[in-house]
Length: 121
Length: 106
Image 1: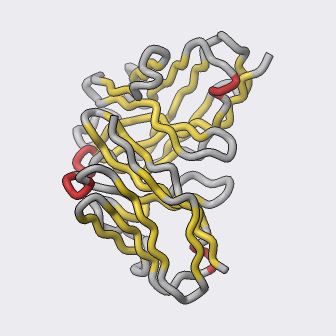
Image 2: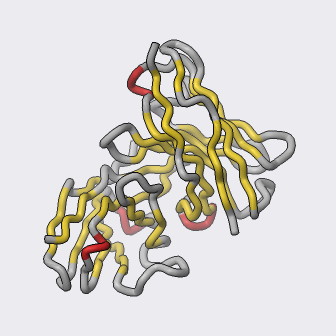
Protein backbone atom coordinates (compact mmCIF):
# COMPACT_ATOMS: atom_id res chain seq x y z
CA UNK A 1 0.00 0.00 0.00
CA UNK A 2 1.49 3.30 -1.11
CA UNK A 3 1.56 6.04 1.49
CA UNK A 4 2.79 9.61 1.28
CA UNK A 5 3.35 11.72 4.37
CA UNK A 6 4.22 15.41 4.48
CA UNK A 7 6.34 16.89 7.24
CA UNK A 8 7.70 20.29 8.06
CA UNK A 9 7.03 23.49 10.00
CA UNK A 10 3.44 24.60 10.31
CA UNK A 11 4.42 28.25 10.70
CA UNK A 12 6.76 30.25 8.51
CA UNK A 13 7.59 33.94 8.74
CA UNK A 14 7.03 36.27 5.79
CA UNK A 15 10.01 36.55 3.42
CA UNK A 16 11.46 33.25 4.68
CA UNK A 17 11.63 29.89 2.91
CA UNK A 18 8.95 27.23 3.34
CA UNK A 19 10.49 23.74 3.40
CA UNK A 20 8.50 20.52 3.37
CA UNK A 21 9.43 16.90 2.94
CA UNK A 22 7.36 13.99 1.66
CA UNK A 23 8.09 10.50 2.85
CA UNK A 24 7.12 7.72 0.43
CA UNK A 25 6.44 4.18 1.56
CA UNK A 26 5.20 1.19 -0.37
CA UNK A 27 6.80 2.34 -3.61
CA UNK A 28 10.12 3.41 -5.01
CA UNK A 29 10.68 6.98 -6.10
CA UNK A 30 13.07 5.69 -8.78
CA UNK A 31 10.22 4.30 -10.82
CA UNK A 32 9.76 5.18 -14.48
CA UNK A 33 5.99 5.11 -14.06
CA UNK A 34 5.47 8.08 -11.79
CA UNK A 35 6.24 11.71 -11.14
CA UNK A 36 6.32 13.03 -7.58
CA UNK A 37 4.79 16.41 -6.98
CA UNK A 38 3.38 19.12 -4.75
CA UNK A 39 -0.09 20.66 -4.81
CA UNK A 40 -1.53 23.23 -2.44
CA UNK A 41 -4.95 24.50 -1.45
CA UNK A 42 -5.48 27.88 0.14
CA UNK A 43 -8.30 28.06 2.71
CA UNK A 44 -11.64 27.79 0.95
CA UNK A 45 -10.02 27.72 -2.50
CA UNK A 46 -9.28 25.21 -5.22
CA UNK A 47 -6.28 23.05 -5.97
CA UNK A 48 -3.09 24.70 -7.21
CA UNK A 49 -0.30 22.64 -8.72
CA UNK A 50 3.22 23.71 -7.73
CA UNK A 51 5.50 21.30 -9.56
CA UNK A 52 6.81 17.79 -9.86
CA UNK A 53 9.99 15.78 -10.24
CA UNK A 54 10.90 12.60 -12.11
CA UNK A 55 13.27 9.98 -10.76
CA UNK A 56 15.96 11.29 -13.11
CA UNK A 57 15.81 14.64 -11.34
CA UNK A 58 14.00 16.41 -14.17
CA UNK A 59 11.54 18.95 -12.86
CA UNK A 60 8.45 20.77 -14.07
CA UNK A 61 7.14 23.84 -12.26
CA UNK A 62 4.07 26.02 -12.32
CA UNK A 63 4.84 29.04 -14.48
CA UNK A 64 3.38 31.38 -11.87
CA UNK A 65 5.64 30.07 -9.10
CA UNK A 66 8.66 28.94 -11.08
CA UNK A 67 10.96 31.63 -9.72
CA UNK A 68 10.27 30.59 -6.10
CA UNK A 69 9.86 26.80 -6.17
CA UNK A 70 12.46 24.07 -5.93
CA UNK A 71 11.57 20.39 -5.79
CA UNK A 72 14.31 17.89 -5.13
CA UNK A 73 14.87 14.20 -4.50
CA UNK A 74 16.59 12.93 -1.41
CA UNK A 75 19.54 10.68 -2.29
CA UNK A 76 17.88 7.97 -0.22
CA UNK A 77 15.07 7.94 -2.79
CA UNK A 78 12.61 7.70 0.09
CA UNK A 79 11.87 11.40 0.36
CA UNK A 80 11.34 14.33 -1.93
CA UNK A 81 11.17 17.93 -0.88
CA UNK A 82 9.61 21.29 -1.59
CA UNK A 83 11.18 24.67 -1.03
CA UNK A 84 9.18 27.83 -1.60
CA UNK A 85 11.16 31.02 -1.17
CA UNK A 86 10.14 34.54 -0.16
CA UNK A 87 6.77 33.50 1.22
CA UNK A 88 3.91 35.87 1.94
CA UNK A 89 0.51 35.44 3.56
CA UNK A 90 -0.79 34.37 0.15
CA UNK A 91 1.26 31.18 0.51
CA UNK A 92 -0.77 30.07 3.53
CA UNK A 93 -2.31 26.80 2.43
CA UNK A 94 -2.60 23.07 2.94
CA UNK A 95 0.27 21.51 1.05
CA UNK A 96 -0.17 18.02 -0.40
CA UNK A 97 2.51 15.77 -1.80
CA UNK A 98 1.34 13.52 -4.57
CA UNK A 99 2.17 10.66 -6.93
CA UNK A 100 1.41 11.45 -10.57
CA UNK A 101 0.94 8.72 -13.17
CA UNK A 102 3.09 9.58 -16.18
CA UNK A 103 1.00 7.89 -18.89
CA UNK A 104 -2.32 9.16 -17.54
CA UNK A 105 -1.70 12.86 -18.09
CA UNK A 106 -0.17 13.03 -14.63
CA UNK A 107 -3.30 11.90 -12.83
CA UNK A 108 -2.69 11.84 -9.08
CA UNK A 109 -3.44 8.38 -7.82
CA UNK A 110 -2.04 8.87 -4.32
CA UNK A 111 -2.13 11.96 -2.14
CA UNK A 112 -0.59 12.73 1.21
CA UNK A 113 -2.93 13.78 3.99
CA UNK A 114 -1.83 17.39 3.60
CA UNK A 115 -0.11 19.73 6.00
CA UNK A 116 -1.25 23.24 6.84
CA UNK A 117 1.42 25.89 6.54
CA UNK A 118 0.63 29.34 7.85
CA UNK A 119 2.72 32.33 6.87
CA UNK A 120 2.67 34.86 9.69
CA UNK A 121 5.06 36.87 11.80
CA UNK B 1 -1.37 29.03 -20.74
CA UNK B 2 -4.05 26.38 -20.90
CA UNK B 3 -7.17 26.80 -18.76
CA UNK B 4 -9.88 24.44 -17.54
CA UNK B 5 -13.23 25.99 -16.66
CA UNK B 6 -15.82 24.51 -14.32
CA UNK B 7 -19.12 25.86 -13.08
CA UNK B 8 -18.82 26.77 -9.39
CA UNK B 9 -21.85 24.77 -8.32
CA UNK B 10 -24.27 22.07 -9.40
CA UNK B 11 -27.33 20.83 -7.54
CA UNK B 12 -29.03 17.46 -7.88
CA UNK B 13 -31.80 15.57 -6.11
CA UNK B 14 -30.98 12.22 -4.49
CA UNK B 15 -31.31 9.37 -6.96
CA UNK B 16 -31.02 11.66 -9.98
CA UNK B 17 -28.13 12.05 -12.40
CA UNK B 18 -25.58 14.80 -11.94
CA UNK B 19 -23.47 16.15 -14.77
CA UNK B 20 -20.36 18.19 -13.97
CA UNK B 21 -18.67 19.84 -16.92
CA UNK B 22 -15.08 20.89 -17.53
CA UNK B 23 -14.26 22.96 -20.60
CA UNK B 24 -11.05 23.81 -22.39
CA UNK B 25 -9.78 24.43 -25.89
CA UNK B 26 -9.75 21.17 -27.89
CA UNK B 27 -10.04 19.32 -24.62
CA UNK B 28 -10.77 16.03 -26.37
CA UNK B 29 -7.12 16.00 -27.50
CA UNK B 30 -6.05 15.61 -23.89
CA UNK B 31 -6.67 13.11 -21.12
CA UNK B 32 -8.82 14.32 -18.24
CA UNK B 33 -8.88 13.13 -14.66
CA UNK B 34 -11.53 13.86 -12.04
CA UNK B 35 -11.15 14.13 -8.27
CA UNK B 36 -13.64 14.18 -5.43
CA UNK B 37 -12.82 16.14 -2.29
CA UNK B 38 -14.90 16.23 0.87
CA UNK B 39 -14.23 18.81 3.60
CA UNK B 40 -10.99 18.29 5.47
CA UNK B 41 -9.91 15.39 3.28
CA UNK B 42 -7.38 14.89 0.53
CA UNK B 43 -8.79 14.65 -2.98
CA UNK B 44 -9.55 11.18 -4.33
CA UNK B 45 -9.03 10.17 -7.96
CA UNK B 46 -12.35 8.94 -9.35
CA UNK B 47 -11.76 9.05 -13.12
CA UNK B 48 -8.54 8.99 -15.17
CA UNK B 49 -7.85 8.96 -18.91
CA UNK B 50 -11.29 10.46 -19.51
CA UNK B 51 -13.40 7.46 -18.53
CA UNK B 52 -11.47 4.92 -16.48
CA UNK B 53 -12.36 4.25 -12.85
CA UNK B 54 -9.67 3.30 -10.34
CA UNK B 55 -10.28 0.20 -8.27
CA UNK B 56 -12.84 0.82 -5.56
CA UNK B 57 -14.64 3.70 -7.25
CA UNK B 58 -18.38 2.97 -7.63
CA UNK B 59 -19.78 2.34 -11.10
CA UNK B 60 -22.17 5.26 -10.74
CA UNK B 61 -19.22 7.54 -11.54
CA UNK B 62 -18.44 7.80 -15.25
CA UNK B 63 -16.62 10.22 -17.52
CA UNK B 64 -16.54 11.34 -21.12
CA UNK B 65 -14.55 13.82 -23.16
CA UNK B 66 -15.55 15.26 -26.52
CA UNK B 67 -14.85 18.47 -28.38
CA UNK B 68 -14.15 21.20 -25.84
CA UNK B 69 -15.94 19.62 -22.89
CA UNK B 70 -15.31 16.75 -20.51
CA UNK B 71 -18.16 15.57 -18.34
CA UNK B 72 -18.29 13.71 -15.07
CA UNK B 73 -21.59 11.90 -14.66
CA UNK B 74 -22.87 10.58 -11.35
CA UNK B 75 -25.82 8.26 -11.78
CA UNK B 76 -28.19 7.64 -8.90
CA UNK B 77 -26.56 10.40 -6.87
CA UNK B 78 -26.34 9.74 -3.16
CA UNK B 79 -26.03 12.11 -0.25
CA UNK B 80 -22.45 10.91 0.25
CA UNK B 81 -21.56 12.26 -3.20
CA UNK B 82 -21.93 15.83 -1.97
CA UNK B 83 -18.42 17.18 -2.40
CA UNK B 84 -16.13 19.36 -4.49
CA UNK B 85 -15.13 17.92 -7.85
CA UNK B 86 -12.04 18.96 -9.81
CA UNK B 87 -11.00 18.17 -13.35
CA UNK B 88 -7.31 18.01 -14.26
CA UNK B 89 -5.12 17.59 -17.31
CA UNK B 90 -1.52 17.89 -18.46
CA UNK B 91 -0.37 20.42 -21.04
CA UNK B 92 3.20 21.13 -22.17
CA UNK B 93 4.83 20.17 -18.93
CA UNK B 94 2.18 21.65 -16.68
CA UNK B 95 -0.48 20.05 -14.50
CA UNK B 96 -3.70 22.04 -14.73
CA UNK B 97 -6.68 21.90 -12.41
CA UNK B 98 -10.11 23.30 -13.04
CA UNK B 99 -11.47 25.67 -10.44
CA UNK B 100 -13.73 23.02 -8.94
CA UNK B 101 -17.47 22.41 -8.80
CA UNK B 102 -19.38 22.09 -5.57
CA UNK B 103 -22.02 19.39 -5.90
CA UNK B 104 -24.99 19.82 -3.60
CA UNK B 105 -27.37 16.92 -3.14
CA UNK B 106 -30.69 18.47 -2.13
